[in-house]
Length: 182
Image 1 (cartoon, rainbow, N blue to C red):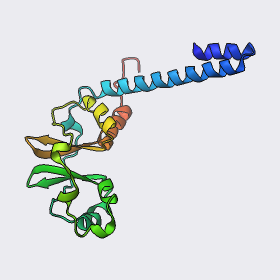
Image 2: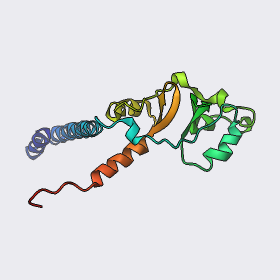
Image 3: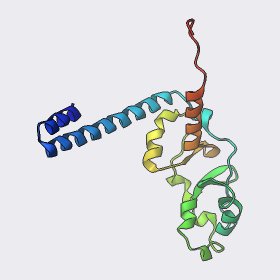
């Protein structure tokens, strides 16, 4: 409606007011479209448990490893931006690529993963039974690419944005049931 009113004003000779209404109408349209997309996404994933999408083959780090070892063995060769840190099978923290980048390379030999990692108490974690739809907003708000999946403090997997995108891609490309009429 605002875009239409803006066009009417432009044709009536009120250029500035017309363009302003068109701009406001366009902004509201984009916001509504974005909200609708988020709603559809949340509804699509509302009944999908984390255990169906999580990765169970997880590359983990030891808190005793030096940052130099981690950079040489993992960050330079694998695409992951964050790695869970385990003592035994218990999650004790997470080390991100950015945490290492923020430190001067000359300190990497002296610092251990355990000294730099984000402790598990400060990490958002999820359980395998939680629904993915409930986790989208917190993951996006926190800017998390990967969230540890735990049961009783034990790491059982990771849920990443790429896991969710892979599922959504599969769902959108999956063949639909044909009706009787084709």
